[in-house]
Structure formats: C-alpha cells, structure tokens
Image 1 (cartoon, rainbow, N blue to C red):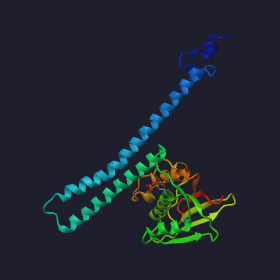
Image 2 (cartoon, protein in one colour; image 1 turned 120 degrees about the vertical axis):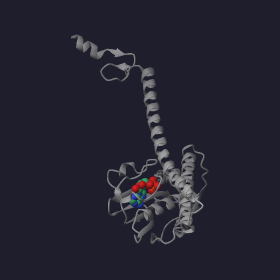
Image 3 (cartoon, rainbow, N blue to C red; image 1 turned 60 degrees about the horizontal axis):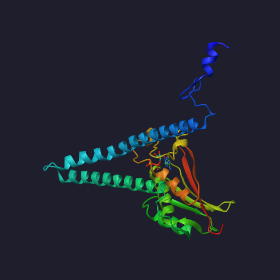
Image 4 (cartoon, helix red, strand yellow; image 1 turned 135 degrees about the horizontal axis):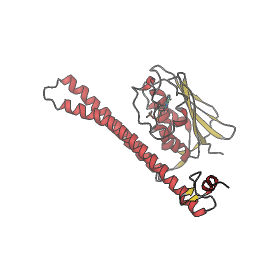
Length: 265
Ligand code: ADP
C-alpha cells in the first residue's frame, strides 16, 4: 500500500482525514459532531434574524427621527406639521405591529400562546374579518354545505386578516379578491384567499414562510412590511392541526389556502 493511501485512511482527532467527518463507528464522537453542527446552524440562524430585525427597526426609527427633528422647528408651517405627525403615527403603528407579531411568534414557538379550540361557523368569522378591511373589493365563494370548523377562533381570525391584508396590499387598488371555503374529500375544510395582484416570483416561493423573508423585486419595493405575517400564519394554522400553502404566478396573482378540521370529523 502506498504512503498516500495510508494517509488517506488515517483518522484525525476530529474525524476522518479524507471526509472531515468523525468515524461513524465511534458513537460518542459522532454524537458530539452532530451537536456541534446543530449549534453552528442555530448561531447562523440567530445571526441572520438579528440582522433582519435590526433592519426592521432601523427603517421606522430613521423615519421617526427625521420627522421629530422637523417637528421641533418652531417656524414649521401648520400644514407641514400635520404631514409629519401622520408619518410619526404611521411609523409608531409599524413598530407596534412588529412587536405584536414578534410576541405572537415567541408565544407560539415556546408553546405559551393560549389556545382555546371551539366549534364555530366559518362564514360568520370570514364576514367579520372582511368587514375590518374597508374599501377593498372582496367576493365570497363559501360552499353552501360548509360544516362548523374547530380551532381557536381568534388565532384563525389572525390568519385570515394576514392573508386578506396581503391580497389587498399586493394587488392594484381595484383588484378583485376572493375568499372561499369548501369541505375536502378528506373531511377537512379548505379556506382560501385569491387575488389577481403581483404574484410571487418562482425563485422566492420556497422561502415565503421563513421569518422576515420579503420578496425583493422592483414591482413591490415601495410596499412596506415586516416579512413576519406568513411565518406567523404557518405557525397559527399548524397550531390548529392544519396545513398552509399557496399557488402563485408572478405578474398574475396568488391563491393562499389553509386547512382546518371540521367539527364533525
Ligand atoms: P410582509 O407582507 O410583511 O412583507 P409576509 O410574511 O406577509 O410579509 O409576506 C412575505 C412576502 O411574500 C411579502 O414580502 C410579499 O412580497 C410576498 N407576498 C405575500 N402575500 C402575497 C400576495 N398575496 N401577493 C404577492 N406577494 C405576496
């Protein structure tokens, strides 16, 4: 055997010389290696989240700082004062929404979000939520034989609010939005929100439910958001035992859907 092949098969204290992996035969070293890899992955995720959160805080704070400086000018015209106050209100609201979303995410991830599953009429909830979106054109497509569904009514309302607000936000002003629901052959109820707006580029689609993920395309660079809404929806739907997904064509529109258990299942 040549010295080259001898070296190749020799183990280092941290693993196999040729692969960099520990000897799979040594269970404790392998276990330590896997834990090490998992910790490294967690550190990378935390660093990315801190980076994204910093960005989410910086934008409204810059706008707030600028407006407050201008408002401090005693000679500022009344019309301008009003204009800058609106900016302040909007940015404070944006920070409050961010905080609320972060709190809900934390409570879901730590299992401390209070969940009260009840049987309720989906049509009533959908109409209630649509009523909170003034000025938008929402059409209903709720099947006539819709059974009662089971889940935490408030949490499901948050999912509907997020999906409907996104449909409105990423559509032209006169864009038609549809909210629908029907029982599936599996016995589960599928709820969907369809729009004919911007749609989602294919390359962004695999990442859409990741925390803080936002599509960086020029067709939406003026539309504000935190990139938390869909990750929150996913956790909320899964908290009811359901699943969430979407179909979308960039430039044509999207259909987001989720499933809920029917109470007579
Ligand atoms: P946000 O809207 O705050 O950025 P979300 O998590 O709700 O965060 O959505 C993530 C991204 O997915 C958005 O930045 C947006 O580009 C895209 N998106 C979500 N819903 C729609 C939709 N109905 N139509 C087009 N794009 C959407």
